[in-house]
Image (cartoon, rainbow, N blue to C red):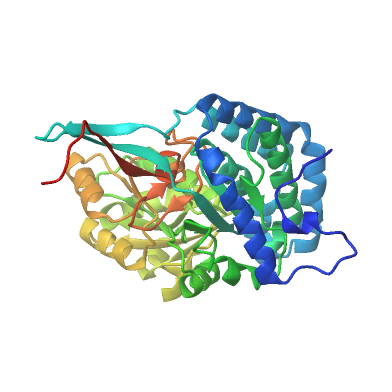
Amino acid sequence: METRSSTVSDQKSEESEPLPISEYVRELVSKAQRATRKLASLSTSTKNQALLTMAEALVAKSDELLAANERDLEAFGTTPGNKAMADRLRLTEKRIGEMAAGIREVEKLPDPVGMMSTMWTRPNGMQVGRVRVPIGVIGIIYESRPNVTADSAALCLKSGNVCVLRGGSEAIHSNTTIAGILAEASEQAGVPSGAITFVDRVDREVVPVLLKQDRFIDLIIPRGGESLMTLIAEHSTIPVIKHDAGVCHVYVDAAADASMAEAICINAKAQRPSTCNAMETLLLHQSIARTLLPKLATSLKAANVEIRGCPKTCQVLSDAKPASEQDYGKEFLDLILAVKIVKNMDEAMEHIAQYGSRHTEAIVTTDYGRAMRFLKEVDAGAVLVNASTRLNDGYQFGLGAEIGISTSRIHARGPMGLEELTCSKFIVLGSGQLRE
């Protein structure tokens, strides 16, 4: 008998009235919580076998998945305003293969559960230590990108966490299919039912109700736009780790290698502009602007990038569009780039502090002192020297598939891999010690 991801609606006949939203959500999350103890105690070998089975199932059922994705794409449309999100939504054989590869990478990583960072002995002979344990039930609310379903399920499973997945309505068929395939495969390998739970109702009222389930859900991880973040901030009674907008900058310093700077900027902007780690604003030192910018602009235009520049930029590039104040600090998620010429690194860092989203920032320079100062003073989840912002990614950092890039300051910042999905508890080994 085919098993699908844990949903309450599967348990009801098609003829019956749908459950009220509050009851639907409560049944869903309570079943998820019941899976926590068994999942947390699974052996590493069982979890690894489940992950491999999940990866194989995705590839084996790619035709089913592509058909579901096509239904989403047809419903979503491809108008120019939808271009960036449509790219995030689209699945191909290659992207399905990448999802499966990401799951296999997670399988290869060390299991963080049970790791002991330190242990010490107190004067009374009592031994005290800290050990990593699963967080529990993690609710993940996200938009558009179906690969988040696979990445989240894999990382949560390996770290011993139950996941409650709520994707956007625009990807409902894709996400339902992915979650169903993964749940079925994992349960065949010994993972408890409910460990991969998918919210299959697209009612807007579901999310506010889900955010009140602090009795059953231990952490919320949102991935999406400003409206989603506002909704979660207003309604959640559960701790939240934000994965907010990516307003990423590259600062090209006076001491930059010109060819390196050009390659980094083209990659950061044009390699995949719809992602949160794509460059949105280029900052150029004034001493190299007139020599570097025309050649760089030619390469950017060849990649179909529209340049919106400050007054100085427009003096150097007569065909650049004047940038508005709103263009700085904007996440375009498209082949549009804001450019500003700055007088020095201090002005560049001030601009980043004012307009950045603390996601990813980069400097291109051969000056060691400036590079180290940029690393120290710029506030972001990841700060890079002489590398593309597109490299701020769990897979690229060696963490395996990530659950997102945290822009929060608490608990985890930057790509969230396995270790970031655990917390610690104290353990004490005594021999009859008493408090006096």
